[in-house]
Length: 537
Ligand code: NAI
Ligand code: MG
Image (cartoon, rainbow, N blue to C red):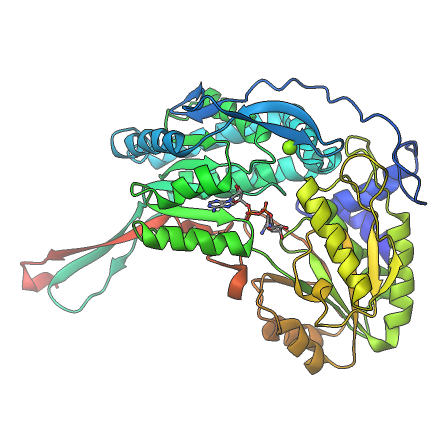
């Protein structure tokens, strides 16, 4: 009953809600079951053919699509089959150099930082409008390239992308400094200025959403950008590059390079003429990026990294509701979320009931072609990630956790994995300490609040947490005690352009989204002017 009430409320709410989850569940009833897994049936049919052509595969430098200097290309694959979708130009050191020259020129000589803030704002609004207009083509490319659910991309992510760009378009002409009451005969003010050329590196789990999180605040503040997409998912950003042109973004302001981390990515991080870096991805690569920045020109770095977020279900929680949210918190996006609720801590008094219901929910999860409406889960992104997740599942079994359901690949083709649930998980098992990044739920038992707070905080990560309780004092205690960048109370994965996001500890540095993101893209200049007339001090 509780879930049904939430369903009706959420299905009318904004794109940042969980509306998709519940819409998906409803529409499932009417859809065919052809490609679905609910009872271990293999995925046998041919994948649905995407209704879009791949038109943009070259590098986007200085407002033009250009060949890579080396002439090299690399394939981008369809995670449903492992087959090649297209060959994409492969950027390397020389291409990064060209892109940085273009961005430098657009910053130093070009119109962008010198353009009025209102004009910049209008360009950002036009980009948002064009992305909204081309929702269908973009969502199709994104699903094809990444295996993400089409319905999720089209109805949740692209509206979020549009919202974030409009949010930062609105900020562009509201960025200003202060007048400072310094001691002495001085007029003191601060100017908030763009940093310059920004290097941005994004991952494959939310390709275009990360693109928007990165370019939105950077451009609103007047910076220029060289962005490297993830090698698994180059297509949606290239399509949007064309829209940047159409929106009237001056050439060189955003440059998009497809390519690999150790080559193009490292070249961007080490470049002496890049003034700042922003990265989303693994904690290990975050460390590499920081050292490349330190060993070149000490450019500042913002990092949004991994997590092992606790999802805590207290003794007074509505169990059915908590089961549904815990399921969503972990399985959303094939479990490929930095903030996935991947340690489900459940109070001992409701543990057995919770495990039973979590297992039943996972068994009902529909897995299949991400283009088919109503499916809740598609394939993992790549064979590497697929193998990594299966390895963690094996380690869970070997370490003595109870495999309640799942535990294996689904079908014989592509990177599909059965929704997997482990109970009797202990804190020191690898499945409870490491970021699995797949559809594997680990359910742990706790006795009291102090104990679970201590255990929840005993990790190198600090990205997010969920708490389910009806008691406001309990909620207030957890809110302050958990060392994480975001805490969701009686909800999970609520993202909005205005809400800051980032990690404590080794989950990152700095914040994205909201007003907080602007700070990462601005320099503060103090201007001190001598006052000559003591009568007006
Ligand atoms: P990764 O962190 O290596 O890749 C993310 C981005 O960094 C890609 O664009 C990649 O090309 C780039 N990159 C890699 N090495 C680089 C280098 N030396 N210099 C500059 N850029 C570099 O992540 P990967 O290998 O795709 O996935 C490994 C694990 O990372 C996943 O299993 C998951 O645990 C975690 N991950 C976390 C994400 C998050 O949202 N925080 C997103 C993707 C992965
Ligand atoms: Mg791909």
